Amino acid sequence: MRIAKNIKKLLIVSAFLGTGWSLYGQVDTSLSDQNFFLKPYGGVSMISAVSPVLKLDGKELPSKVNTGIGFSTGITAGYKFTPNFTVEAGWEYKTNDIDFTVDNKTHLGNYASNTFYLNGIYVFNTKSRFKPYAGAGISFIQEIDLDYETFESERSFSTDGELGVQGLAGLDYLINDRVVLNTELTHTRYASFDLIAEDGSGGELQDLKYNPFVLNVGIKILF
Image (cartoon, rainbow, N blue to C red; front, side):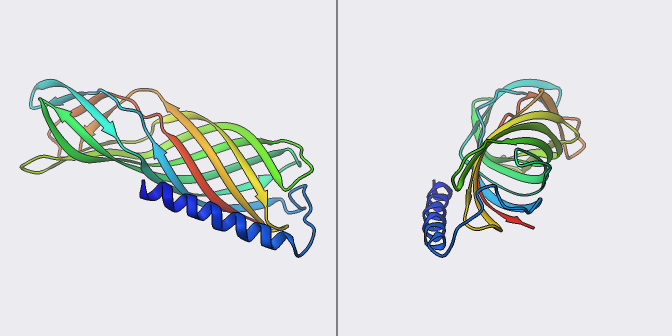
């Protein structure tokens, strides 16, 4: 909840700065003549509970993974081909604390991923500083891991190379011809996959799902 409060403060401050800036001149509401942009961002990650099977020491045990609101951060580079069509590529890191329940015992842990993505975006025509848009693309998991603590040690499971699809919707607010305040909601879906134990024991977390919603706030720098 602290992350959500900080993002709310950032939105308020950014909106205030944007309003003040607008008093000093007109802005080209076509998103300016700059074709390239770079967007650093951060926000919150939300993942639904999942019920994988834990394969460990020759046993297959049903388990439950409950997640809280997590953190996301990333950076995007894009190119505007037309006033309405943009292509972007980027990197994103997401992390969520979890409660991992197996054999009637609950352990604290973490679920995190490094991903790369490629999106196509359509920007809707408006005659104001606000520019809504929607898009779709693909996402590649460079690495994803799930860790949880036991009384004896930490257990870690990971995999890589998974490919998913994503949809997104966002809103740009033009502060000036070079700086844009951005907020975006993205949902990504991957097929079920297995995570392999990192200690070489042969253990697995089977039939795991990872379909996060991510709400971000960022600043686009146009050039």
